Length: 405
Image (cartoon, rainbow, N blue to C red; front, top):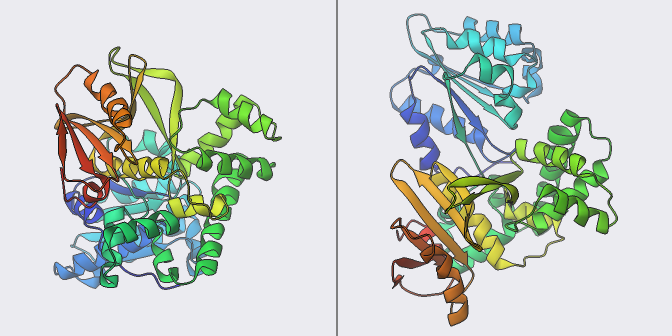
């Protein structure tokens, strides 16, 4: 399947920022979110900078022709044999987690002055254990996700459709790059996304964690995507699953969730007590990596637009800020507390606040923080930016497009 190439300047800028720096560039993210394409785009950029093609080596370790390179020694020797003497060489190794003891090859390549190394992986175990210990302080992780709303919009700019129409398509089809080729073929798009789900569950989670009860794992995934953005706990999830006829202990739920999060399928977010200035040990939220995948899991239903909007906003905040958590102030909830080198910001997300009581509920928690950090309310209401005594209300689609604050 050919994939439409869409510029992704956010990730390109990150790669350029660390080009020729003495760190390993580790690109992580869920399967099929565009990591391989991003490497190809970066390689093309290097060529445009005048770097000779011979100085660039690319190895996709999911391809059959590279099967012999799944031995770390052979991988290392192949890379070394292709180096151009006396020049900086750029090595791109895709899906390196397929190589047993890959960290030995990575470390040996890293210590060479003539190598600038870029690797990708579809599982957080890539940066656990030996590699994290071995390369502590010597790598930078660049986390990729499927297309943001702005990237998706850019890919469809020739359609002439309204921003609202693009939004409707985005939350139905999702942002997996290859689905752009299947926009006019719902059946094929469904099959493609279903295949991604099966691969992740069976290969990245069940196989890695030796899970035999894959039906229970699949049921848990469907439950979690149906409950995105809801505060929950491992025990509450276990109780809910048992009530649905799928008996899972809290320990088993915790194990399954760990595998799903390590595969970048689900993203957990901790709660932060604003007044107590501490992370809370109970209750957190989970967000699903792609709304097209959610639609497949929930039998083509698009519902709970407010929580879908919150899910989309979460991933945009992850791109814009260093850390994102769920907020608690007294007995009220703040959807997101974000921090970066520029300080803190608060965000509330609602489908609509045209009802005065809804508006008051959404902004009261923000006011209760008692500080002067920026506070934003994002909604789908068709309105110009408004100020509510220190809380700035913005149209969420404009904000996602970068057209407002």
